[in-house]
Length: 295
Ligand SMILES: NC(=O)c1ccc[n+]([C@@H]2O[C@H](COP(=O)([O-])OP(=O)(O)OC[C@H]3O[C@@H](n4cnc5c(N)ncnc54)[C@H](OP(=O)(O)O)[C@@H]3O)[C@@H](O)[C@H]2O)c1
Image (cartoon, rainbow, N blue to C red):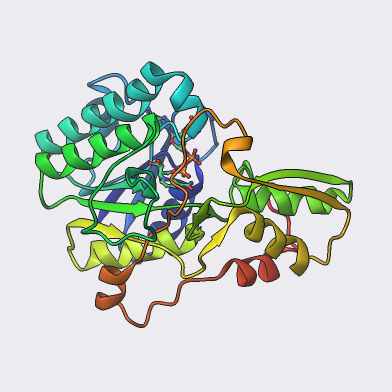
């Protein structure tokens, strides 16, 4: 199978590139948007013909894994036009390419399509995004499945893992701990989610693709914790005490984008199909990575 990963310079795309590339018989390439990495191809998805030009020069993929988006939730709220361009308009160009060539797509969405009143959520729960990011991701999911019901939309949340820039919360905290300097944290005590390991997401995507699955699936770990508990899990497992943690309600943090408070996802549909699949816990990930380089 020929696979192109858009957004392979990011957390989820990087893991998809790694895991799909290890699959026998798969030919896999990855793209970046603004953060060049040696093995990746620059593809400017804002240009409607960029993917066609890339495919002429390299290969026409059977599958496109679409991880590209503006993922900084507060930036999306402050710059909605930029969010729309990078997340929705670019995605439309990618969808059009897939339609022209009959390419299947895996697209990623988020628990921010829900309002956080009653999470963790199942696939069939009603959506009600609170933020620009959530609204734009909902447009992406709806247009993806309207364009081609055989596409796959994976909703994910609070992703952690090893990545080149180490920008996810857990990786950044591990990095700070390794610097062995005082750490100051101001975190919401009321934002709950289901932290999920990026490597698990990529492995789950591979299983679903190999089974030819389509539609919406939630892919989520089984931890259900707030941001303070997440930080404390990392700090305790590392035995790190040189920190000052202020636990605050969300309304005192002044975050530009509203957050779903009881967010998170239940991967019941995925687990019904793959009952043997075990999602990593945050604790396991930290134990396995606390002594390794995170970047
Ligand atoms: N991380 C999470 O907790 C989380 C939660 C829910 C959903 N998701 C979704 O999962 C997907 C992957 O997220 P991530 O965590 O891997 O994010 P990430 O680390 O911020 O990576 C985003 C990737 O998208 C690329 N990109 C940005 N704008 C693009 C565009 N217009 N066209 C093509 N590529 C573009 C970036 O490229 P450059 O860096 O090279 O510019 C980067 O490779 C996104 O759809 C995101 O909304 C993530």
